[in-house]
Amino acid sequence: MDAQKAKIIKVKKNPDGDITDVMADNGNVYSIDEAIMMTKDHMFEGVNVGRARNGREYLRSNPNDNDSDNLDSLPTF
Image (cartoon, rainbow, N blue to C red; front, side, top):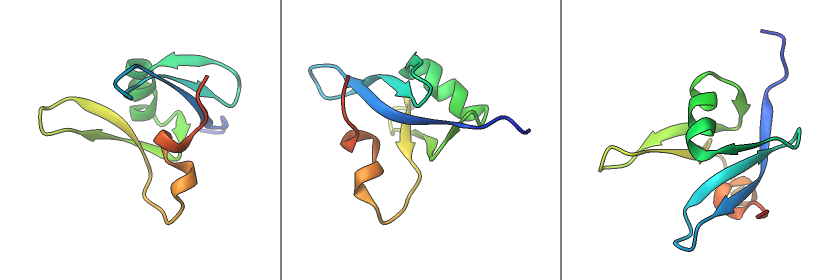
């Protein structure tokens, strides 16, 4: 697969602080559900899909020593 993977650069949060939408470096905006499906299809770099105890899937940054690239630390739009 030669296609360049997209990178999440901004997030939109609801009043509870949950991420509802993400913006990719190409300017496209995706709902969190779309972003989870795209991550499963290996279309985003630097993130993976986790599963909460209640069974809900969520997007998370790949583990590293840099907190600034965590999804919660990204700028909002």
